[in-house]
Image 1 (cartoon, rainbow, N blue to C red):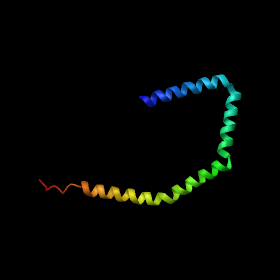
Image 2: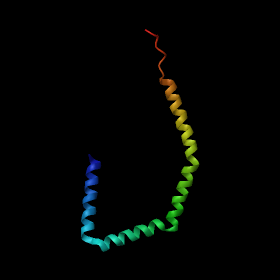
Image 3: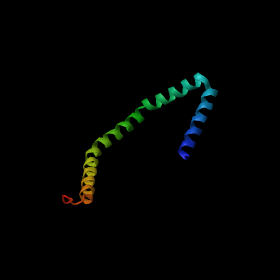
Image 4: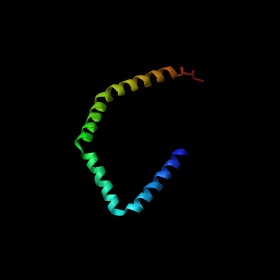
Length: 83
């Protein structure tokens, strides 16, 4: 419920700001966000995070597979005799 309340407040604040600033304000905010995203510093960080994830993903996959196999083996029931 608190998450829904925060979402509702966020939508309300966004609506009020949008109504007050109009199209020109929206375009200004959009340009600033685009400029920030396209800045070399942000793009370097995005690239670094992507490289880190690519390096760690195979290791994480192996670890998750090992844990799943261990849990699966530990929770298997013995075969039931035929009735």
